[in-house]
Image 1 (cartoon, helix red, strand yellow):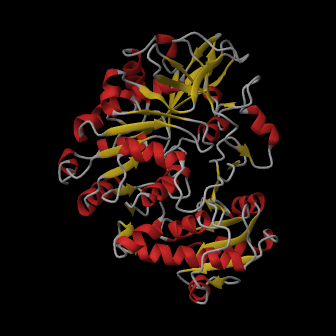
Image 2 (image 1 turned 30 degrees about the vertical axis):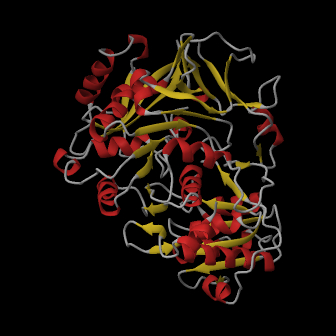
Image 3 (image 1 turned 180 degrees about the vertical axis):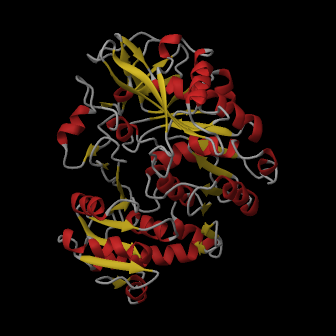
Length: 509
């Protein structure tokens, strides 16, 4: 399905609502504006497989652009608007964007990159004037909403967070199905699993330039639901939005759970959250204590999936399954799971190894980087791919994540996984944020170091360090206990909560 179907049935029903201002984009508006934008890009010379880019803060224009790409066979690259001009210019050039659309709030960056992105043929701006850019509203008003001749669907080409260097683009092949035809495997998997339909009110508290927030909103709209977009995550504002808009579905990352759980009890209980039916979480491993606390608070409505921007595969787990298998991220819902050693040999059930997903064909490539694409493939099976995560599978086929291979600490020849230590400290009342890394050690090669952002009003120092080390020592094997703890004002994270651990480690190595 696509917005046009719902524009005919219920034209005035909201497709997008901004949680802070109440600004609304109806399905009729979404249909007309996305059709006009698709036609405008077509008249600018863009054809199937070409790319255009969007540089903007969260707002309804994201989904106008999303559906313009879908209905015209184009790739859209949504750019992290927090990047520096040089970083934005790199992405614009690398993705081959022929048209760039920018919001007036990103005027400084949009104008700064003009001379750095000479291949861009058209520059459009909305919500105000940007030097060197045509006004999007004026252009759309002068363009008819006539369908483009080739309505085979398009897609996105999004960039990784760049946690270990320059961000990499993930390019998935465009499907051959036409606009409105069934066949999107993600809509089928997630729509059925979570019960997305025309009654769905889906809260998105994360930046839309990231894959899951962007795509899930589109999938919800494909099934007729309303997407409520927060301009940015705030724990109290998120609870308020659930109550105000009678949210039925939502999606989170574990750090958002932690922030909400650390709100004062009277704030947490202030809001009516009874409209919720499904709360999805993903993007990072969720500590067992955090997830259990969320289920105790919200009820057994939590659903977790493990996936990647690359579309390698998916595992799924609901609350009942998780309560029976605490810590698991579920069973395969798309692709076949394989756990392999460093040589590519599958390991026995229960043993830890690199996680691969088997698909019928290679589901993606890294744009302009065949070596990186090859590095994600299994040594002998090109259709088995990995993101570098490690884990194990139990006798029932449930996957348990261990950590990312790149972050594993090897101390005295023993493998130590930072995630396990981070999980212990995450809900400590004196800890606001936590990262565990390996730092050089002359005797053991590496030693375990914790880097802690103390909770508000907590004074860092030797006494707190000793308290936290003893807290960990009481709960896990002593060889895993941090040898030292550093205290910082803030840990480096992306706006979605992903820890930039490589950036942190650079300060110590």
